[in-house]
Length: 304
Image (cartoon, rainbow, N blue to C red):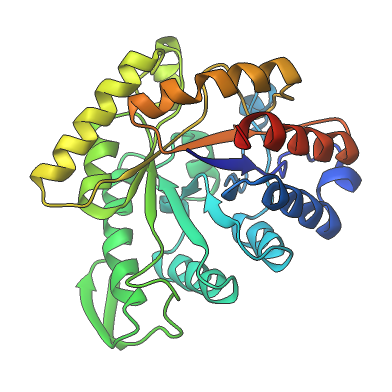
């Protein structure tokens, strides 16, 4: 099992504790020292107040935040969980991801999804109903750009005639692409375009809001992982990674020692279901207690 620590870049009400260069560096280094394999950030450029009042969150720009984490670490991977691809121009995204991969020594994992917040799409002046098609298009264009070779593509509204993007990503042919979402369409995107899947625990009642099916039990998770792996095998693809937030955890949680001990006991169950990475959100009222909590997690869960 490998572990991802969610950086607390959503803690906008405690900026001096969590949203400074030193804070990002301190937390990223603590994660690396504790044995975490990756740190992650989210992507919400301009969320609506109504969504924020119902438990939504703000966030630093993902590429900027991860660049500060990269500069203060040497080993830990840099995961976007998730980068909402149809919010962004595909070539500018490809440039940003490649730049981070080069400067970090090839540590980027590009986690992406189609997004679900209709209000945020509207605020950005972007279509909502075609977001899935635009995501697929963007991935095709980004992969072409990441080749480092001259590219000619006519894919409206993009007209590319002999353009070249260098430097290419350090990882070849590109950083791993992981997809978020619980639907079979999300799984098919993994098989078609990616190397990993990031489902999320979710009550079935929340499906209408998030536009992705509920996922409430370990048996449901195991069934969908089996569908993913068999689909990849049928398509001649390598075995995709699976990254999952443990049941009962949310981004705004501040896990305690009992939670750590319970998760340590549950790791084998997640592994048997097919999970390769557990993504653990960390929050807190101050940086010192957060750093101590990360250290405790390393001792009680990762070291086990």
